Length: 137
Image 1 (cartoon, helix red, strand yellow):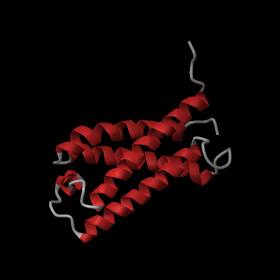
Image 2: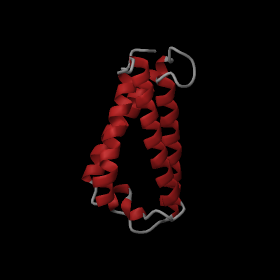
Image 3: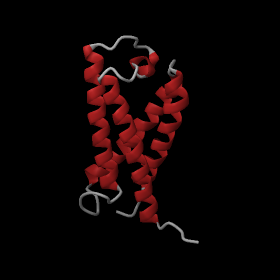
Image 4: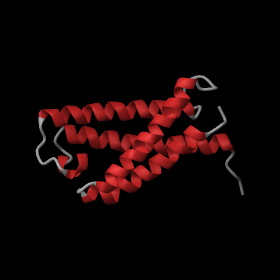
């Protein structure tokens, strides 16, 4: 039986976070395109896809892409090792943001956010926490 070494576990966590972030990027882009119902996002309180909501979804997708870069860099999958202090701090900011996002998902009136996105963001938060707290780089 093989065991995962610390760096491999951190990198696995970063890969899990990357996959989930990529899913949410897709959801945001589909929402911006009018394909994914906006009523299932943003707390479930929006019923109409306005230009502002489209732009907000695109900005959210870009921010999530930046989160991928930060988490992957911190895990040693991108950039230099050890990670610069700014990347280490940013990984904690991403983790905190995801924790708050999880609370928001569970407080949503949208059942999709509560029962699908909520558990997904818990997993993302834990994966980001593992990466942010890692000492391997």
